[in-house]
Image 1 (cartoon, rainbow, N blue to C red):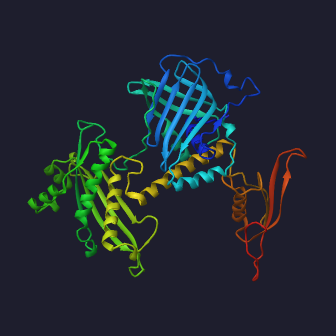
Image 2: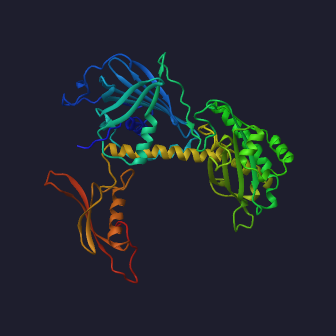
Image 3: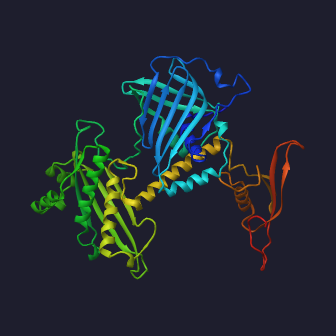
Length: 498
């Protein structure tokens, strides 16, 4: 029997379950009719080095594991679109001599502290609530994970539980949340969750003599010749904006990073008329900095194309090269093109705000987005509400990914539409039940199979519930269809009958 185990998956997965039921809900311990499958059958756990509370700060929040003499408790606390979600999972457990922890879930408790203005996540919660999942099926679920004592803390790895294969993207979400090094809490308290967004192109030294020391960055910004006079002076404003945002983010995330005063960069250019012929690493050596951010504004616009300047729709294409000064005259450490749009949510009538104000907001948002590419930052520390909307959507996507996994864990599978009979122009498709709601969308899956077989021009000839194992057997819903002849005055095609 092929299995893949996931106590970590359950940890995060139950988060999605938590979103779908009343706040503060409690799942009671489910009594098993078979003593062999009951959690009570687990041997008495070993005591010793694992006793106490261990925690780790991850990008999404805090994960803590408490080993008591007779119970294991796992707590997950993280932020999603300004909501704080706390999950506590309890289990019977045993620790083997090699550090393998085996157990079974005995109870789940969760608490959601919503932010009134976080409407985006509220919509996701409503969708999850409509799923009608069987949460109790998670109780008594067996699991295991490996522990190992290291010089930096307790390593948790190889999370497992009996569940079918899941997709790699969901697997990555769960493993990155729970796997890692845990720090021992001397007084048993768990630190406050601080959701941290990682930098895509970090300006740090991970090893070598500069590891842990302050990093100094210099900004060089230029514009393509085709950028019009409406953006005159934007290079200086953008330089100041990025430098200011980098300092702000560094302070918030306690990262040792400073941006060189743009005045000193301008002075360097005046004192070195041939500076454009130098390699960026030479600029850095003369300025005594660690990294050079060479930013080129390739395209910039303020108005929606074709709107006769009636609507704002700010756009830009920005090329960024990051040079490690110590690496010398080689290729950049990072290179990327950043497509920018403001506002993210659409367009804005030009009579709603003066062009000078819109241009200022446009540059501030662009500066903030570029700065967050290079330094880790607290969730929501982007460029105001418009940028925050995108981060909320990202959080909702995270919860949705988790919900998808829980759907599979609880036995639901939207791929259960299958062919019962198939000929060139007709066929019968079977689905577990006649429903078309989140998360399974069975009927939609059946229609997709039909379209793949005969195309969008089809007729539903018959559909009904049948028993497949006699009068008391399992039920399924069957749809009989045929390819529809092409007629000039044919009725609307596809879909279910009214």
